[in-house]
Length: 279
Ligand SMILES: [Mg+2]
Image (cartoon, rainbow, N blue to C red; front, side, top):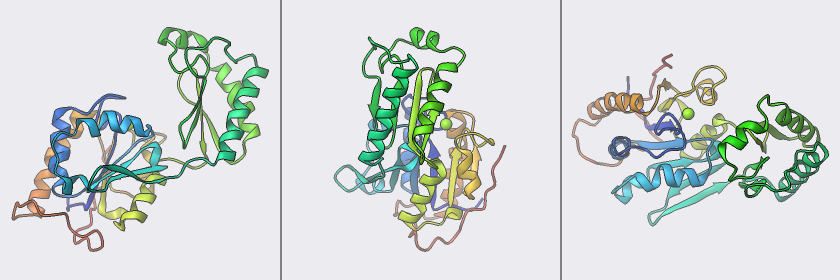
């Protein structure tokens, strides 16, 4: 394997347990990696999850290293980097006010029409996440058992999804969790985020290396592989950690001086990665 210029990761079940914090071992590996290469993390999760799952767990990392970290929540519809003083938004490709208003209205009206609008929910039913509108039938704070019992066959969500989708051409309407419907702009997956990343950094996709737990056809990491990014399949964060130990040996060889100089210039990668997907 030749050395990549940028190493990218899925978050849930690749760097951390689903919705959980990265472990001290992963934090240490990321710190070491950031001394050598650019590091990107891309997830369908929202910005808040990146703060709690990753940023808050990173520990002491020098500023120069932090500026090499690229965070891409909600599949790269948002892009966050450290600007020398703190993590700041590079861009947020959120839904327009018009798109949001249309989505919120369609969800409310169709849920009422279908008798699925809960009169006494646990918290808000509708949530504006910027790049995504989410409907939670029983409210954001509904207990797990109540959510589980609400729509065991999925027929309620399917009916609402179909009714809302018919009213929102140009937006993607999906069944999310056990009681939820998510609305985003159409055509947004991790390939979108990786394309944004290569455009913004100038680092070619072929000089990147991506780790994901769902690179199988139909998995949410598959679009990255299909885009042509050299990719490595992992099975949970422990497996990722083991594979990063191996990668760091290669990166040590790539920088035989062993010093902590900044990574190679993105515009002149001297050794593009050629790794193929495994599994
Ligand atoms: Mg995952």
